[in-house]
Image (cartoon, rainbow, N blue to C red):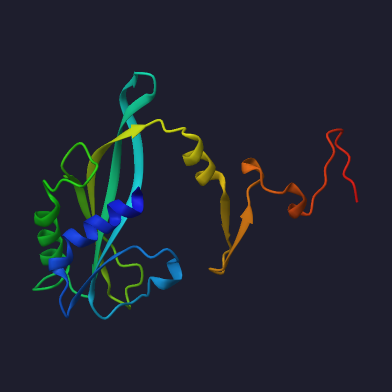
Length: 189
């Protein structure tokens, strides 16, 4: 769901992309987010969500889910064409009032902030804008959906590599874990 929201917003912001501006979703691996960059960069990231309002129980739980989306503009200049202020303004114009697929409300603007440079010698300005939307959060415990969700867990290391392991909750083979624990608390060798 969140990846689809990010992708749809990146598509909406595509007109900003030029030879001097790049638009992208925040990378899956932070090491791929190179700094400093030569171009002005617009990055989209779903930041958080919060269920709010009254819970409606009509045989299944339905709630309103407010999703926060950060649009981050980074550039080596604050002013002028294709730099922080101009690109942030254009992004706000493109997103304000845009209705994402599967959302109940149009996107609204919450706030924006120019952050101090992380390293003064690099001189990169960062402007973070927070946009919000609302979508329904609906209980979905269909057997196939639950089985798909529990089928595999991907464990990411600090070094960017990953390994996929069976999830014992979905009926995976517990013997593959390397542990054999009896219910009396004693481990077999």
